[in-house]
Amino acid sequence: MLPSSEIKEVSFKDYLVILKRRIWVILACFLIVSILFVLQSYKKTPLFRAEAKILVESAAPSVVSIQQVYGITSDITSQIGILTSRSLAKQVIEALVAEGDNSFTGISDPEIRFLADAKVEQTRGSNIIKIGYVSTNAVKAARYANLLTEKYLAQDRDKRTAATRSAVEFLAKQVTEIKNKLNDSEAALNDYVKQ
Image (tube, rainbow, N blue to C red; front, side, top):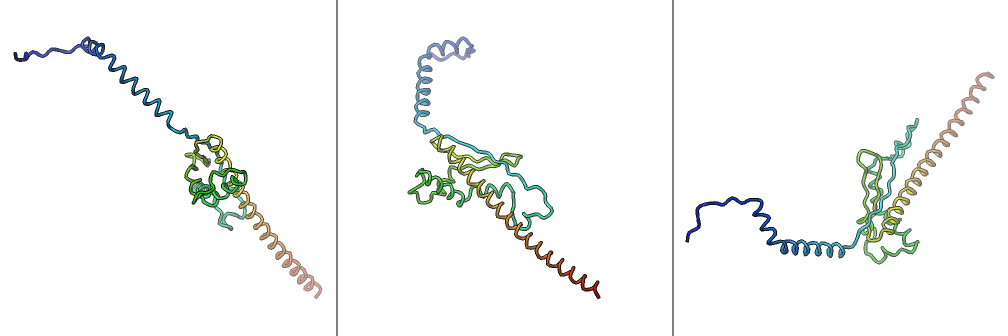
């Protein structure tokens, strides 16, 4: 017998009948997918991200710009470059080893390994830099982010102190030279007045 050329309209009731007939298959698929998702979630190693934030302020305007004299820039990009430098990473690793943390000992290039998990980025539209570290251990992530921040701030403070000291020495030398010139001028003036 040939199929009828008449097309039957499918109604919402027909869909409900199909769903009712296949409910066990649908539930079994849902249950299997849910169990696989839960198992996969538990197999993954959790990652923790710790962040520290610093504000990079430009120096107050001064009569003589120390930054111009000594070539110091406070550009955010430069500061991010310093934060992601191998030399700063080496200082952090040395401090960690001194504290007894041997996570980076025995690695061929520990600075690169440390910097691979360090995340440094500028907060959009501000002078704030976020310094983060990602680790499977929450305490280590926080410690490494904080230590990177501390070492950066110490290095920045030392650099600014050295620049200030150098400027003070320069100005002291200028004052001595000007005093000598003033004394010579006063002596010449006194000699002229006596004549």
